[in-house]
Length: 247
Image 1 (cartoon, rainbow, N blue to C red):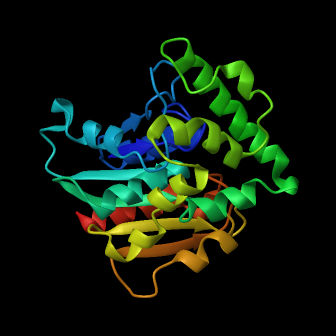
Image 2 (image 1 turned 180 degrees about the horizontal axis):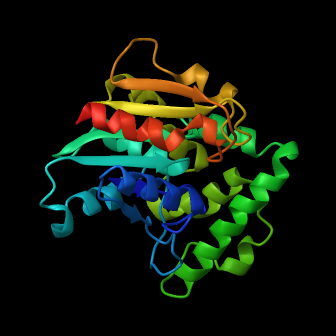
Image 3 (image 1 turned 60 degrees about the horizontal axis):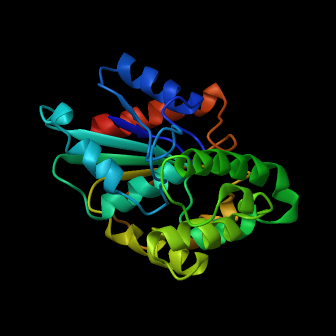
């Protein structure tokens, strides 16, 4: 089982470590994966539609002996994971996404509201750290000091993500890579765990984009906030039960 962090996180994020510990107790072999730049040691950074890092991990020699592969992604990592499920590599048996956005535009507009400034500052702080680490190793779209005044995620994506990956703008990036239009066509069993009180990916940004027809996607609503849950939500067990049924 490969576990993918959310925006600003890495392989050592608490929710990633908890998921790996639960998986190990249930007999899974767990790999905690940092997407490019997330550990502040890389020469590039990732975006919400970039599945190539995940594909490379699944195709690596270290995983070649496993007959079945599972992926669980948290928050933005879950978005990347769902995109992978729309065009799955060999041996991918099932996936799960926890507290993940479906429409990047809708989610970004919500986080960029004035009342969400605390969450937004936290995300931007992590993005700036990652960007500065990349800038120490290779050319970047703008010098880090020029981005100190960025106050919204949309502006960050306009000035950093879009030029780096060839999008015309942040909106073009969101329209191109958002997983929402792909959800009816997911090709492996897929679980979306959504939190009713999620302050960063609220219900209002999830339900309008869920598929109207039953398909590979199963949706479970739990109590809790953004990748933080009471024990009664049993999120790790729900994901592991899903994987065991798919196997």
